[in-house]
Image (cartoon, rainbow, N blue to C red; front, side, top):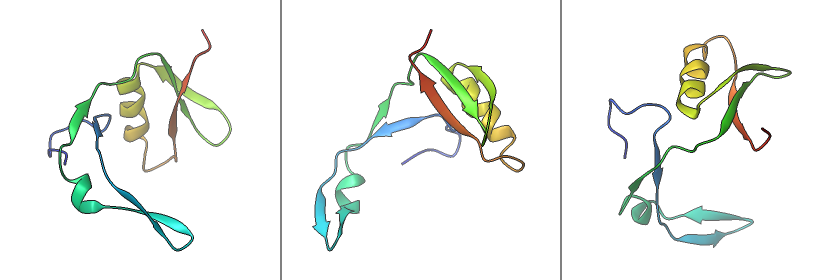
Length: 84
């Protein structure tokens, strides 16, 4: 569960049970709600990508802020890269 004032880049790690459900899988929501813990922000090089180009790059939290600020105009995704 996230707090109202948490940043969009905040991550939580959950433990859950996964069960086969027909052709797919079902995650147990009751187990998912228990024992969540904060997950550290990833480090490295990140890019904000639109459908055909890189529009911004920087730290993970900066990229999430950038993508979030333009969410009404673009469908951005934030990607990481191991390329230096």
